[in-house]
Amino acid sequence: MQNFANELIRQLVARHQGVRIGALSFSEEATFLSPLTTDYVGVSQAIQRARHINSYTNQAAAFRMARTIFNSAFPTGAPRVKIIVMATDGEPTKEVGEEVR
Image (tube, rainbow, N blue to C red; front, side, top):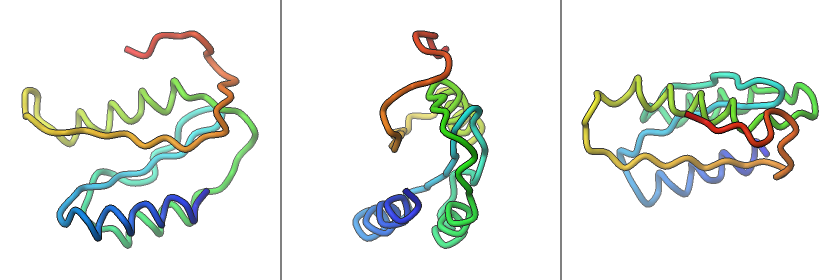
């Protein structure tokens, strides 16, 4: 998963200079790894240091943390394109059916 994430960063940077990238990991809970930044090496290093904690897939927690990262990086009303790329096994095991607000 870490190699995939780092390759994705490499490809995004090659095509879209100046794009800001952040990172988080999630298992039973979401874990903040990096704010939105153009320090691509720093984000890649944060991803490499992340460890697999256990086999939970709390997607709701990941989306909540991503929203928090976006909200702290962009002032209210600022027109920006915000994209989340989630890599997962696709089987949510926590908070299934809970609406993310």
